[in-house]
Image (cartoon, rainbow, N blue to C red; front, side, top):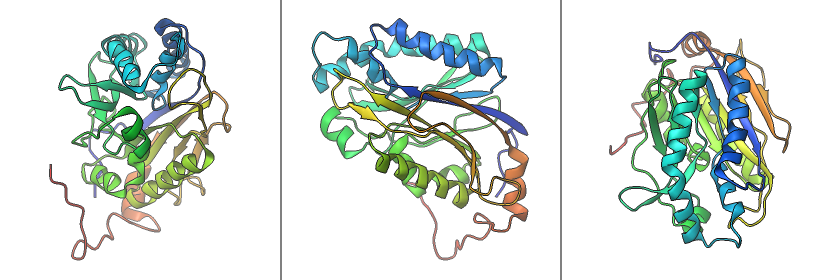
Length: 297
């Protein structure tokens, strides 16, 4: 199976491992985001990825902890500003920004967990989380999105799988069938066990689909935010485990539970070599006569 011919041969990616902090205002949060983006842009990164649910920090400024419904109301009020700020920042710094994720009500009244991708040409795209966790569903009323499509960028098509989505192998295979070789996974997990579920599944996806995956997680603790007391992460840039790649499939990773920015260069031609000449060729060796992944949309 070929990668999309639109891929640049070399892509530099950055991942933000962000610490939860009491956040007095939208500007305080966005100034932190800008500092990370400026750092990545100075290093000529093509992409920077932020963690899932990083905008929950905006709720910490409330005089009293908001209820889940009031929290979604508050976050929805910031959605247009978030889109505008990220769109402007991506164009200003000439970097594609995978904008973590943001819980918001859509125009149809449905609460979703959405990742926006602000392209450096000033346009924006989005991907909704398809599989809300039981906790997201029960507490926030978040419902799953309805489609999984590649997002076109100047570096080629990329995929986004938000946290729990990475634990469903059908999504990785769907992206591989769509000629995607680079997938971003913003995540937020409160304990090491949850982090490892995401990490192990992302490693599996790189082997199964011979792709790169960039994970970006939240860390630390925060008060006055419903259903977000603490977070555990070790964000990473992951590769297949084959000749020419790191033996452990880890190109870069952040220190555990410390705010950090990691950057690495991805050679997309290596994926093509792995798919055609690798010691294992998972995509080429599929038994389509026995099994396949079919999507209804």
